[in-house]
Length: 224
Image (cartoon, one colour):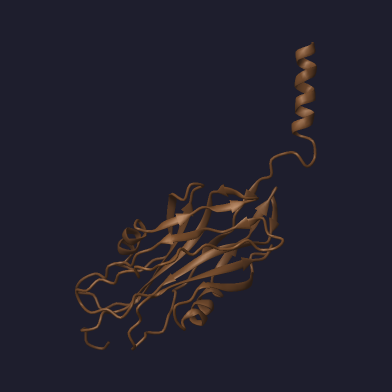
């Protein structure tokens, strides 16, 4: 009898209002179009730009902050983003405002047979805490460019949604926007990326981030 009463008392303490574990589900992209970036005639030495996207309770973009902007291509990325669809985050089963890290990777001007490499002085991109938000999205610790398939002159993008675990490991990858003949190149390049896990209330959690690999025809091909 005493044991039974202790169990009831323990349950009442653990499950009392305000003390139960909160269930937080991070936001996600449900559909994405082509990540269009205008072709650059000048040499671009670094093509990774990262955006911190605020998502409302209705799954709409509230604001977009550039976390890394090595050039003048962020505005084009924002145009692409506004055509995407998002599923909002939820807390205890109710939609809530949140944030999502989205990376666009445009290769530097390259020539046939030459592979682009990331800068040696790359500084990890870590989203900051924001007032009123208990969630900090995924950070990027390192990245790498994709190879370009031989004998191709196509250009476009492959958009991947990456599930990043609580220790920064890649749990799953889904293709939001495919490109025939290029998907495997983007997936292979993603294996060389390293992430920092998102956090909720200061603790690492499983979350999602999106990476758009932009492919442009290497110089040396006719028409480019």
